[in-house]
Length: 251
Image (cartoon, rainbow, N blue to C red):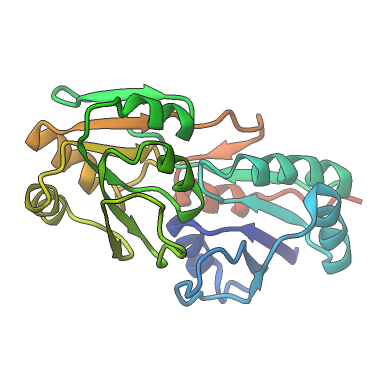
């Protein structure tokens, strides 16, 4: 049975899954990227870039291209895309399975302040000026203009343009993975007192969390959003096992 797979990606796991499926004669695989990163990493399968126009647009694409399996391998914080995927799978009558990496868990020595939103993170910084490391997407930085008293170290894959309207900010452009040792060095060099991060999970960006624990640096951790209740696996091997027994295309 030949299946046409659409992977909603943008994560390291999506790329690794695509690598495993590339060349497999049982599957025709396409990887969809939102297009927010200017120079995405090279991908091992055909790529579609850009939005679909909501759940209805995604469902129309699934029907037009004859997609028989939809895989949601988006970022844990891409809640709207995951909701659209769940709705589109129902509209197009195709099976959906999510690849969701486990969240990081608090360990002894972690100094976490957990909040529910980026706005909550801004408030948690407090009024006293501090040296803050922001490890968020470019689209999530604007709320920190409401706290201009802090000194910010900002790291992103693409340049932040325009820069934030704050008096003290240093910008770094880099793509992970980031090792614990190099992250500890970065924190020490800049005298970082506080990190703002999302609980992305996975090893690629965990280095800063491990380094913060080692150095006693506080972390404001933005909790994950609630995602649709759909069939899901946590590991690529589990996804491959599911695909080995994938149901026949629905009529």
